[in-house]
Amino acid sequence: QVQLVESGGGLLQAGGSLRLSCAASGRTFSSYTMGWFRQAPGKEREVVARIEWSGAPYYADSVKGRFTISRDNAKNTVYLQLNSLEPEDTATYYCAARYKYKSSWDYWGQGTQVTVSS
Image 1 (cartoon, rainbow, N blue to C red):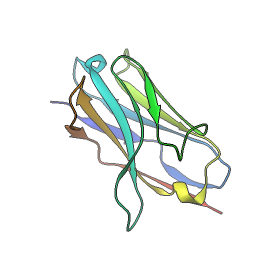
Image 2: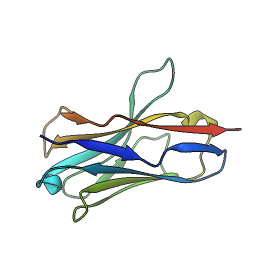
Image 3: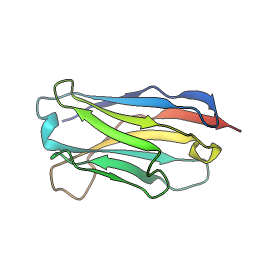
């Protein structure tokens, strides 16, 4: 069982930066692929970025060059650095985990709100 707790959301102006953190419980964090998703009001949840258990990162086209995902296995934490924020980035951001090569995301955090004003 893995428990995920996000933090770092907030309200800021367009062009600003923010770092989200997701702390995971458990002793096998390094064996999990970690992802960040977001859901805006009235829209479906979408993947923003993921970082494989191997460390390889992947990004949605909409955030490439602006967001950076990273992980610290010693701290059981995954981060999402959000730069050059746009009002369209306003959403609830969720952290998720799946074991190595599994296709389904098994564990989810409660979400943290990011609001970007123009």
